[in-house]
Each structure stands twice: as structure tokens, then as C-alpha cells.
Amino acid sequence: MKRILLITTSFPQSFTGQEAAGTFVFDFCLELAKHADLHVMHPGSKEGSWETDDGFTVHGFCPSSKALSLLKLYRPGDAVQIFNILRKGNALAKQLVKEYSIDHVVCLWALPCAYWARSTGLPYDVWALGSDIWSLGKIPIVQSVLKGVLKDAKSLYADGFQLVDDVKALSGRECMFLPSSRNLGEVEQEESSIESLGGLKLAFLGRWHENKGVDLLMAALEGLDDADWKRVSEVRIAGGGPMEQEVFQSVNKLKKIGRPVSVCGYLNKSEAVAFLLWADWFMLPSRIESVPVVFSDCMQLDLPIVAMPVGDIPRLMEAYEVGICSQRVDAPAFAEALKRILKGVSVTPGSFRKCAEEFSVSRSVETLLDRVK
Image (cartoon, rainbow, N blue to C red; front, side, top):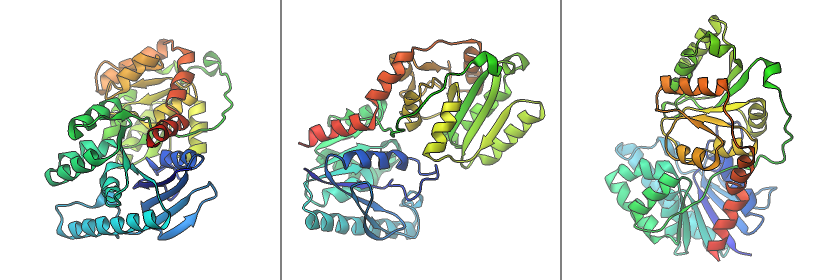
């Protein structure tokens, strides 16, 4: 059995629904631990090593008083902390490799994880995240480091088709698509009659941020007329984030004119499953998107998606026929897409299972391990 060190900046420290990428990182670790002697290294608020009940060991270190995502290289105080983080990470990675006789390192994501992995001298794989390439890749000094760790990796992966191309362009190397998803387990689904409920149930679950287009969604809902709302049973908005005030203002505005709209906060995995099972359609109004984890959630639950035509979404819709895209990335176009599904849009039921299998955690782990050998 291979001894693998997985280095990530996204290991969840709680499961409240706010852990973002951590929700599938944990499930990926669970599956990988079935096939390897797994050690997970991550920066966080908890120091030390501990055995999980799930068959792998976690090694945490607290490198900074601020979250990594909040540190900026152009701030002198932050720059010092960043260099300390890189130094501490290198030291711990080398220590773990020696102490546990590690064979291979897997990095989720490129920076700073691959920087730490490269310092060990062992072969390592990099699974790139969009923010690695699209944000860090634009900073001149950081871009040079990013290119270096990508070029020196054994294998490169990315969780989006466009992201694969971007990684190839940046690194000059081959890169394989590896979907990010989480395992929702066995779920019993109940058949519901749309007519008996008086219309469709529409759901949104995500971060209330400009990139996720929650403001466009609210504007689109405000753009539906009385005839459209007669075909709606209820709209539920879940999540949280910096646009909270705008979301609540729009929801209150819709409620005042009798629209069936409700709002709730972040949802953990079991709550999210119940939330998605309730819905007839999932709304994905993002301005910027690769392949979000919620896409594979919907596939596992046979839930069609109405989405903005951004990133890889149009390609997925065309390939699997599991929903529709609006004509443009704006509120009026998304309102028109909502009107289409309210009038009736057919999807291909068998495509959901096929897509869910291809995007499964077990398939991703299998793909990675085949190339580690």
C-alpha cells in the first residue's frame, strides 16, 4: 500500500456549510484512505497530529494569525507572514516525509501546497484550483513560482475543462481533467407531482458573492411577472456571504408583493441533501464558474439545472442534457431561462446517473492512483 502525503489548504475544520472546497477535500481523503496509507498536512487553527476515525492521520500547523486567503504580498506585514508560512510548511513536509516514509505527495492545490511538496524531493501531483491559475497566476513574482511548481510536478490535474487548458498554457505540460465532487451517499428520492403542488420548486445554494451571481438571480426573480409566478410553488435561497444585505432586501421586496420566496443560511451536507431533494430545479446564476461541486450534487440527486452560460457549464449541459443555459450572462436573460423551465423543459433522466458516475469521488481517486503507480 502506497504511503501518501496529501497537502491541502482546504481541509475542513468544521462542517457548517461554510467550508467551501473543504467539503469535497474531506470526502476525497475518505476515499483515498481506503487505498493508501494516508497522511494529510494542512495549515489551520489546530496544531499537532491526530488519528481520525476514518483511517487517516491529520497533521495541522498554525502558521499565521490571519487566514492564508486574507494575506496580501504587497503588505509588508503580510509579506513577512507569507515567508514564515512557506518556511514552516517546508519544514513540516520534510519532517512528515522522513518520519512516515512517504512514497508520494498529492497537492490540493498548486500554491503554496506544491511549493511545500517540491521541497521534499519526492514526486508530487498537483490538482489545480481556479484561484491558483486565474488569480495567483496574474501576479508577476508569484506566477514565476507557480510555473516552476507546475513544471516540476509528476502529474497535473484541474477540475474544469477550461482550467485544464489554462494549466497547460501556463506550465507547458499535459494536464488531465479531474472533477471535484463529494459523496452524498445512498439517498431515497420521492416522486412529486408538480401540478398538485401548484408549480415548480426552485432552489439556490451557494455563496452570496458577485462571482456567484446571486444579485443577478434576485434581479431575475424580480423580473418574473404574475403569470410566471403562478407556475412557481416556492423559491428557496440558501447560503451566505458579502451580499447578504442585497439578498435580504430583494427577498423582502418580493415577499411584500406576495411572491413565495424564503431564505436560510449555510447548510451542512445532510441539510444540503434535503434542500436539493426538495427542489425541482437548481438555479446556477454564476458570472464566473468552472465545474462547481454543487453540479455533481445535483447529478447524484437527478436535479436539473438552469444556469448562466459561463465556464464549462454550457459544455456539460450539451454533453449530458441535464438542464439549460440562458442566452447571456445578465438578469433579463436568466429571467427568460426561468420562464422557459416554468413552461416546461424536458431533460434526459438517464444522463444524471451517467454524469454522477463520471464525476464521482471514487472515479477521481481511481484516476489519480492509476497514475501514481
